[in-house]
Amino acid sequence: AIEEIKEKMKTVKHKILVLSGKGGVGKSTFSAHLAHGLAEDENTQVALLDIDICGPSIPKIMGLEGEQVHQSGSGWSPVYVEDNLGVMSVGFLLSSPDDAVIWRGPKKNGMIKQFLRDVDWGEVDYLIVDTPPGTSDEHLSVVQYLTAARIDGAVLITTPQEVSLQDVRKEINFCYKVKLPIIGVVENMSGFICPNCKKESQIFPPTTGGAAAMCQDMNVPLLGRVPLDPHIGSRSCLHGHYSCHSLFKEKPETGRRAARWLSVHKGIQEFCNLHQSKEENLMSS
Amino acid sequence: SMFITEPGNLAGVQHIILVLSGKGGVGKSTISAELALALRHTGKKVGILDVDLCGPSIPRMLRAQGKAVHQCDSGWVPVFVDQEQSISLMSVGFLLQKPDDALVWRGPKKNALIKQFVSDVAWGQLDYLVVDTPPGTSDEHMATVEALRPYRPLGALVVTTPQAVSVGDVRRELTFCRKTGLQVMGVVENMSGFTCPHCAECTSVFSRGGGEELARHAGVPFLGSVPLDPELARSLEEGRDFMREFPKSPAFPVLTSIAQKILDATPTQPS
Image (cartoon, rainbow over all chains, first blue to last red; front, side, top):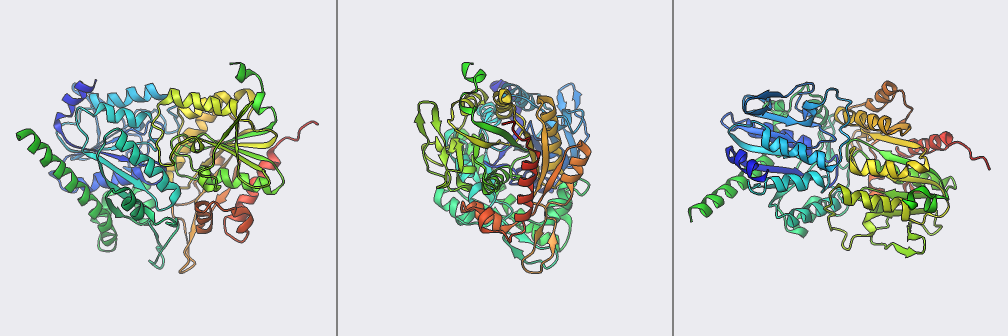
């Protein structure tokens, strides 16, 4: 399967994994923002793959609940949010949102293999893979299936508290173990912006110095810190009917807040471009 | 299988409660830890079994990180959290050589360890055993439910946050309970609302009311909404006893009432 997947992935330029040790730190929200952010440039083709088999949130976040995947001659067709942004999730294969995917490892792995081998992504600049929390079957599988096709790297999401950081350190060690390059760490929910007085306060106290101190400690780049913002949390994204898209178009207040996200996206793009030129150098030498 | 059919190490455990959620980071471990502390303050002896193998949080939350598990004739001796030995704890965190080590395991290995956790920990006499699970409905959950079935767990607490995504996942978790025959003792909504320290405006950070609505829809009890409380977050970070030290905090009355509802829902033992 690894060879088949390598063949399939020839049309996919960059592959990015979004990881976190702990759940609920905002991986899926981040993945959705990143996908929309990159797709702002209409010449960039973006694919978002949700491999959280037991708790797929991407369909809801992208406003695609109830959508179905279509079968075509060349495989499963992703669900398109924009012309240049396709999405795939196990959520599109369930008959009701209440359905629980109570699967053990091997079945989940089979699903991930199918997602990588049988989805007709077409020509894609960025494939963003949103993962479940932890370091288990799904993570091992996606890394193994994509070894021959090369992953650019992983973005690690955390919140500022030590209970979350201690899991990110595990995730960093996971990356070392499986030889997955680390693009960087994003600290999410870093402060809370009151919608009433616009002042910032801490909900999740960074008692051990937050992601900044951890990154310095473990010698990995910090891509940025983004605050908890109810406009982003519940309105723009999570309710689906407001798409994340609007975050990048609204002006000027939301625009200013979006700037913190955009600088993170820029960091990721730069890493991928560097990765690409390194590979080209490698091939030409 | 001899271990499974004989009550063995769980013989002295009166009631088993599982804490579940479909989504991660909604506060399962927080609720497990605070429930244990609240029950302890009513004079109960409590054990916590942390079956989150990839991201164990309970040891830090109860300031037990770095402690070691010892062996005795009947198995592993759990770690006591307090001097009075009223809370005992078993977690994979105690078995790792370094705290940052990642347990990169696939399902079958995880299942084997969970079976061991259920059969080989010498809990002694406990009023309650609280089982904190990882997010999802996969290997760990099936293994835990299967291994505990002979001991007839009292039921499951299902934790959610108010936002829609989380509520979607918790619906899947309720389906899991139904399919596996686990009684839902109730739904707890966590992180509902934050009071701004600058202007005292209360904001529903993750939108509002999902948990109660969901409980009504599913016909299961709603146990309460725990607000976002920086004092609770801080005391978990520092491994302090929130239920003793912060009685004036916004989260305190709700957590107390949730523990009381659990006590009320516990059938009295025929002595």
